[in-house]
Image (cartoon, rainbow, N blue to C red; front, side):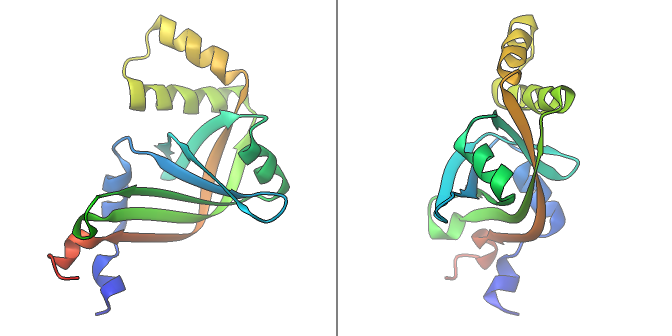
Length: 152
């Protein structure tokens, strides 16, 4: 068994890893071919990574021109603790108000807590300027160095 095989997460381990609120690194391709990399909050909806962002953001401009996207969620400090899930594929953008609000509400609850009336008003105001993005992965790469048992 290769080292890669040893550290690869199962589908269940990936789902468990993505369940808590962590940061999502989002990479898109700028017009000049360079990567555009930003950090976002995310939710898992129907087994897909989803997030929202401003309609006029650079990542949206990039994705409307070229829908290729790579996202990364990682954790750990020391080598033996490193874990991560990287997905490369295609971004699906939605301007549909209901879809945007669904993502926005999920993000608020996931990262900030209860969605009371005041919070809902803030999500609605922010949602008016946003687009929902879902990642359709073509390739998923995962690693959990804790599986090495301290051997590097």
